[in-house]
View 1 (cartoon, protein in one colour):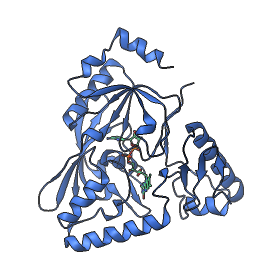
View 2 (cartoon, helix red, strand yellow):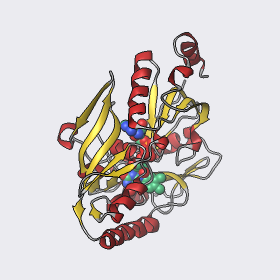
View 3 (spheres, helix red, strand yellow):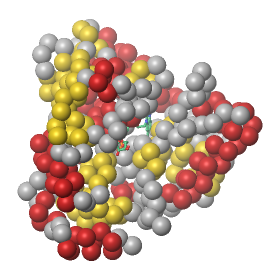
View 4 (cartoon, protein in one colour):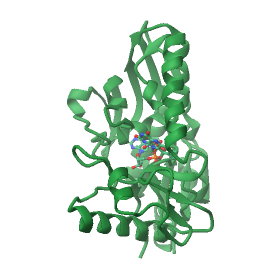
Length: 308
Ligand SMILES: Cc1cc2nc3c(=O)[nH]c(=O)nc-3n(C[C@H](O)[C@H](O)[C@H](O)COP(=O)(O)OP(=O)(O)OC[C@H]3O[C@@H](n4cnc5c(N)ncnc54)[C@H](O)[C@@H]3O)c2cc1C
C-alpha cells in the first residue's frame, strides 16, 4: 500500500539522512496518536525535539520531495484507515513553555494546552482560561484557533514563528496571519513556537475561572470517551450541536462510531471501528441537517484523505 513512497525513498531518501534531526519510527499506527483512536500506519513517524530540529527536518523533507503532515495531540484529526505515505511529524517531543517578560509565555509547538493553562495560572497570567480541557498541542491549536465560540488562542498571540514551504523561517503577528473562528489560516505554514501575551491577575482568581470552565466542559462533553471534539463548525448565529440534536441524530451510529448522546456535535468511537465509518456518519449528519433545516454544516474535524 505504501510502496510508492518506499520506491521514492530507495532511490532518493534514506531515513538515516534525517536521523540527526529527529527520532523516527516506521509504520507507526496513527490510531495510537489520535484521540478518536482511528487511523492506519504512518510510513515514517518523526518526533523532533526542538523548533530548530523541526524546521530543519521540514526543509529537508521539502527539498527531497517527501510528503509530510503535522500531528500535534491528534485531537482534531481523522486519520485514514489506509495510513499515510511519507512523513508524519509529531510535535510530542517539543513540550516546552518558558516565561518571557512580566506578562508573556513562550511555548514550543509541542507544549500541551494543559501545560500552557497551568503555567498561566501559576504566574497569575489571565487569557487562556478557556483552553482548559481542550486536548492538543499549542501548534495544532494555533492551526485550529482552538477555544470557545467567542475566544480563540490567536487572541493571545503576540508573535508566532512559522516555517514556510520553501524553507524560510519568519515571525508573524495576528494582523499578518488574519486567523478567524476555528481557523488559524496558516495556509501551509508550520508553527514552530509562539509568544503569548496575558493580563495580570491573582493566580487563585485565574485558577478558579479555569476550574469553572472545566466543570462546564465535563458536564456538557463526552470527555472520557474517544472523540475528536466538535465535528462541525458552528454556523453563523447558531450551534451545530443544536441543529444535529434537533435533527434527531443523537445516538445514530455507523458501525462503532456514534453521535454522542451528551453533545450532538461530538462523534464517539466505541472501539473496533474505522475512519470510513466516521466519514459515512459525518456525511449523513451534514445531509440530514441540510435537508431538515437548509443549513450547510462545515467540518471542523480535519480529515486526512484515504489512499485509493
Ligand atoms: C474531548 C475534546 C474536547 C475538545 N474541546 C474543544 C474545544 O472546546 N474547543 C476547540 O477549539 N477544540 C476542541 N477540541 C478539538 C481539539 O482539542 C482542538 O482542535 C486542538 O486545538 C487540536 O490540537 P492538536 O494539537 O490535537 O491538533 P491536531 O489534531 O494534531 O492537528 C490539527 C490540525 O493542525 C495541524 N497542525 C498540527 N500541528 C501543527 C503545527 N505545528 N503547525 C501547523 N499545523 C499544525 C494538523 O496537520 C491538523 O491539520 C476538543 C477535542 C476533544 C477530543
